[in-house]
Length: 148
Image 1 (tube, helix red, strand yellow):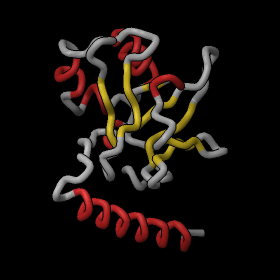
Image 2 (spheres, one colour):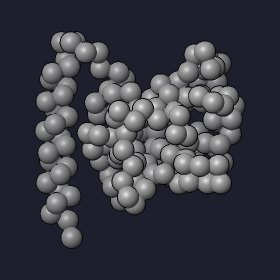
Image 3 (cartoon, helix red, strand yellow):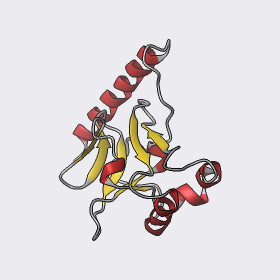
Image 4 (cartoon, one colour):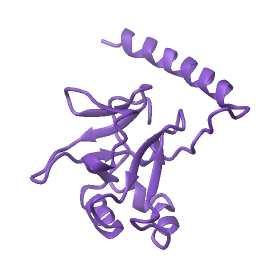
């Protein structure tokens, strides 16, 4: 799904088919926010809650069907929004889409694309993981360039 540019995970997947809510509901607060990492690279992409409560984050996410982030929760060092609203990591991972509402930008993100673990700089596997990611990205770019 995270190199898939045509289809999204189904609405509600994060709450129906994962343990996300059960694993986070008792531990998250503004003092102990959730961090979401690129599944392919381990780079930090989103941190929530910021400028709202965990309850508000979950309520909005349930309403729209995907974890929904606001501008202040986006790590702009690693996230980009394409002109068509598609939201991607700087390394090419498809994350979801920006679907603005009356209060501003709302990034509805596929949980499988941000369910990664952080890769620690200088770890034994960091270079190997980066090389593998670059190979996968190259294969992805070749596939998308050949599509009609």
